[in-house]
Length: 384
Image (cartoon, helix red, strand yellow):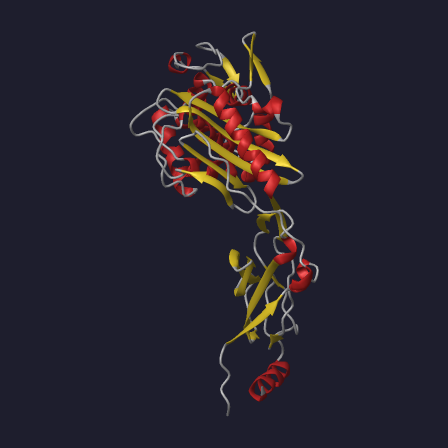
């Protein structure tokens, strides 16, 4: 009796990309090196694919200044999403919050201020007082809140980050990195798209004092919708930015520039470079059926397979027709199979460079078929 080993079925999905022909490929635009910037550290990343398009010193631990408040907001948004807070909840302002040094929202001791207004005061006005008030309301003390911030940082894989306060005041044990900040921005936009809209508001008035959003790119580039500025003497001028043009969202982080105008100009240079020379393509949707390979000994003859999350790639402009997708499926696929069981792998490459690799999963459970059907399939497998 012949033995049946586990084979690997290789399927090259030319059809996905419109049936390209190697002899008739569209010439892609040459991609120059990224701009050389004066910032001590910077990074340009695509939001959907995670591909890094430009970088310098991205893992170096640095004073994040008020970029810290992105994590402060992340924690507040998490509490709101979990139902532990409501935007309309009011916070009694403590003397410690009122005495916060640096940029301020100008809240007063004993004021009762809503979570929503404190968020605006922190995000738009960069209020250290608002940051402390939110931290105390959620965790009792700012120090306890910082521990919560560090827990979220660990969850997000921010390995070069540690927080000691909610506002971004300098401390030897308070640091982050360019890459960690970009990762945080990506997670914030992904998890809290509605709350993220606060970052695009261009001004906020509290206590009869109107303050403009400190992110001056908001009024200069219509595609920019966030995120946060920062400055201390040790950090220099910092800016985390996100922009969305025609469905392509980029994240830029610059740290350690020498002026407020420099962080704007260098960020704009990064964004212009990314949008000029790259394009992001959504190849497969989350849980979209990619293939229906043969299923043995099951109630059905085929199995719907796909990827758990949407798959995007960021590639040079007009390089789409040169993409290659290779799907390898475990063969034979034998029922029963649980929903989301890994049944193969999908690899996407361009000119020999692997761009993405994902597990392919069973999109639905595949129970065993009847006795007779299983016997027939066993015989067919034996004969192959």
